[in-house]
Every structure is written in structure tokens, then in C-alpha cells.
Length: 51
Image: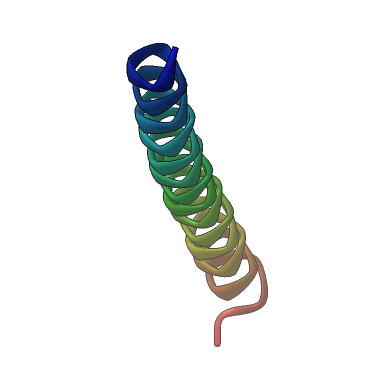
């Protein structure tokens, strides 16, 4: 009985770690997308208004 308890606890811990990494990856991807969009928009504005 204690052995299964230990394995489930370990599995939960690893799942939590993976979810944290997934969230971090999503955040990084989201940030990169937003920054690239902003960069593109800024280039467009500069070209449009001759800044």
C-alpha cells in the first residue's frame, strides 16, 4: 500500500513540473509572438510616416 502511495505522489509531482514547464513555454511563445507583431507594426508605422 505505501508503495503505490509513493508512486502516485511522485507522478503528481512530475505532472506538476511538466505543467509548469508547459506554461512557461506557452508564455515564452506568446511573448515572442507579441514582440514580433509589435516589431512588424512599428516598422509599418515608421515606413508610413517617415519616422
